[in-house]
Image 1 (spheres, helix red, strand yellow):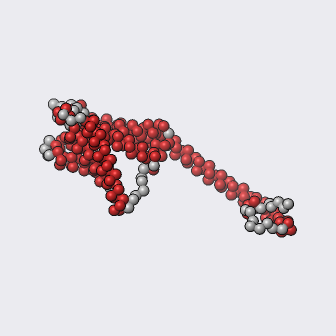
Image 2 (cartoon, one colour):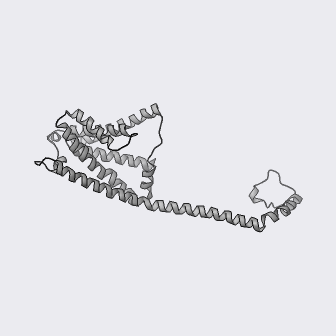
Image 3 (cartoon, helix red, strand yellow):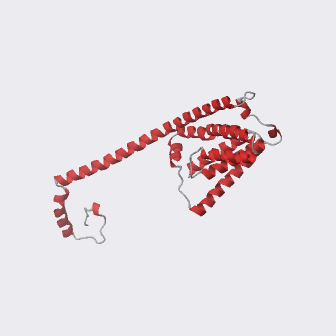
Length: 255
């Protein structure tokens, strides 16, 4: 029985003779076991181990940084909400207070804001995904750009909790108070509600500084504005905004 000692070259198609194996080992052994060759192998292995350890350190550092980024974003959003509410309290007419933005109007006594939230969310999902489907057919599909958000969500429970608080609670409160509760209401005082919805939605979309998502954000603003005008209750647009963001986060995790 011939034992082949050529593991690095794989299994040959035809087994060589014993004489060939002995001659091959004699000719190859000085090369394999020379000091220079051993040194080159050790240097090569050191480089591989160094690259692997460096890559592991980078991954570990990146994993540690994700919760910090999420918590920083949470603190920034809280400060933004506080600043927006402070400015609104200084801008609202003296006979009103800040809580009037979140109080139900007379129209909400006749129309259920929960029904408006359900209808608005369903209509929003239908419009957004139909628009994306048409855009993909006309201009071609684009790769999703939510990889950073996905890394943050999957890095730790702290990052996931902070992201949910930011996207599903703080951001909807801030944006609905500013763009629907204040801006849309102010425009509707001098314009008809349809024009007020369009103008406030355009400003809402432009304020995100995203050319690629301008149309999608404009549609979202229009649906939120129509829901607020129909129900007369800001809670309707806040709920729609929050649930839509929660759906996007869930799709990001599952994608």
